Length: 87
Figure 1 (cartoon, rainbow, N blue to C red):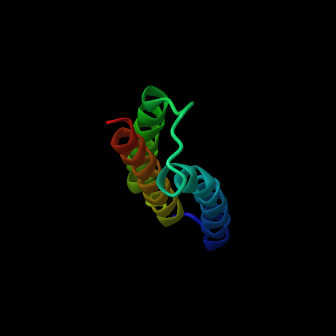
Figure 2 (figure 1 turned 45 degrees about the horizontal axis):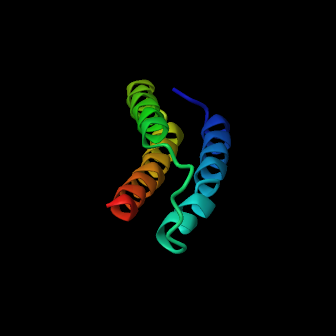
Figure 3 (figure 1 turned 90 degrees about the vertical axis):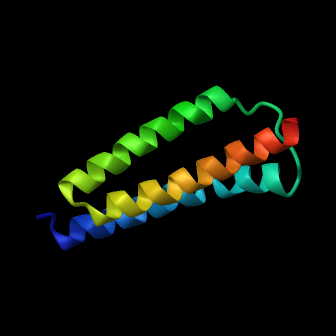
């Protein structure tokens, strides 16, 4: 069992990590800018997040599961936006 204070630290860390993606999402979806974004790199980041999500589920860390689901959602939004713009 993970102590509650450790989960709180995880939630804070995860939230900061997710907020860091917001400017990139805005650039892609609002400004229509996609130059310099590597789909291959973002796909690799997505794979990493899926594995961390699985790990969080296995160890029973709510913070890790929430953070990785949220970050994965941001990355998928960026990938979808870039693909849409590049068509």
